[in-house]
Image 1 (cartoon, helix red, strand yellow):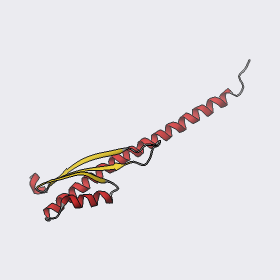
Image 2 (cartoon, helix red, strand yellow; image 1 turned 180 degrees about the horizontal axis):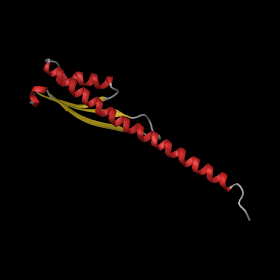
Image 3 (cartoon, rainbow, N blue to C red; image 1 turned 180 degrees about the vertical axis):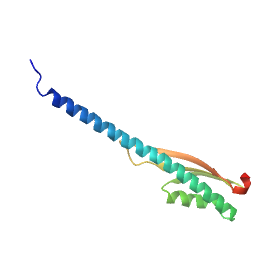
Image 4 (cartoon, rainbow, N blue to C red; image 1 turned 90 degrees about the vertical axis):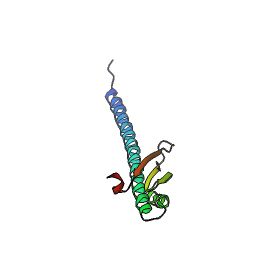
Length: 115
């Protein structure tokens, strides 16, 4: 007895598995991108906060604005003299019915403080 059409079934099964693996890969790369966006937003917000503090302004207020402009939000901000520590959060788009949140922390200080 010969099995006719089994190659078609195997081909369709392999194709479905490959498509599923591609979908998982795309979603994972999206999550990795979101972690990088959170880090970028935290870095930029911390630098802006330090620059604002040097200018005598409210650093955390400017950090929130900069984070918002980078599709993130500041969940923690502290200023010690002119050194800013900012934690930014990025929330992912829904993936398989769930949203993921990525928090990244950055610290910035004036250049003359580091010397």
